[in-house]
Length: 267
Image (cartoon, rainbow, N blue to C red; front, side, top):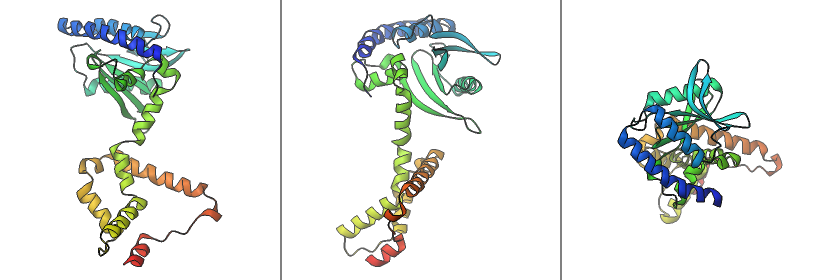
């Protein structure tokens, strides 16, 4: 992800300034209203939004109000739920913010107390679900660190213009322990493992089923495999495999022997 030079320069100056502001605010234990004022200034000075036309307060949502919203060209991009700077972010705060987004059809939600920032994407399913896309501690950001710059850029106005948050979300959906674990259990990977075992130990006789059992029981972590995200990853891989088969011309398709036939031929 490339962060424009003008943005890195702004982040370098403004992040350090507001780190001091937030530390002093926490020492004073300022209330939620004062924290909203600080967040508004951060959105403007750090993330580059026009305070008067692109940052709206008390966004009405079905009779209730979200603290802040980012609106570009008349369309809400983010809903922002703010808590007092000295208050830890909790599950009930998240549920409140998610309800705002779900009721307004806005997928991107930010929950923050000024110091801790959490970015979520709502999945409009039944029931409503969500992904934690990114989280960072503002007071620990190093403006010269590229990874830190990229995290901050996700919330910048320039980041919206380049769909940076969507790109980042797609990346973490595809490159994570659940997806890699699920790929490890696919037949092509297991076939490769079996062939490597045979190459390194010619006298060893092993089946794909035996390798899969070892991967499941001894290699992959239980906390990974027990997560619904892992099962979703397996379904995603299965769908992708079926789609690839459909796209492939019949004349180009090759008959692939089953794992049992392959194992039998090599024993």
